[in-house]
Each structure stands twice: as structure tokens, then as C-alpha cells.
Length: 62
Image (cartoon, rainbow, N blue to C red; front, side):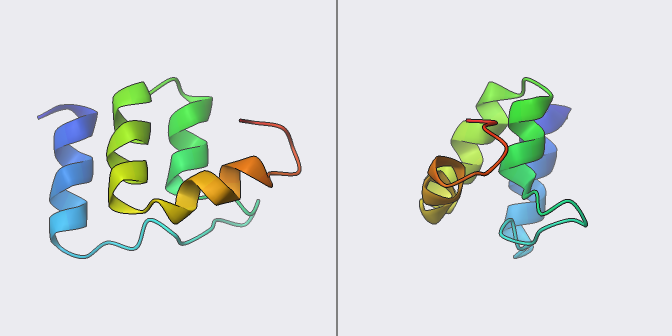
């Protein structure tokens, strides 16, 4: 299924991509860190507010 397929499946079941882990990272931060550009695109299309989180990221992952 691939990363994109899994992400789409999770989102179809209302997974919350805005949740943060212990390091204050969202799913889009993790996708960027691991080079999953298609996943980043899917997440930002579903949750446009994630792009704002990236712009204000303290650790410069953008």
C-alpha cells in the first residue's frame, strides 16, 4: 500500500494529524524528517493549518 496509502487510510478513519508527540512534532514534521514528500502533500491538503505550524517551527525543520 505504501506510505501514502496508509496515511490516506488513517485520515479516512478520522486520524488526527494535528496530534503532537513528546518532542512536539506532528505527522507532517516526521514525514519531512524522513523525506516522504508525497505524505507531506497529502497531510497539508487535508490540514492546511499544518503549513502554519511548519512556518513557526522552532527547530527549523521547514
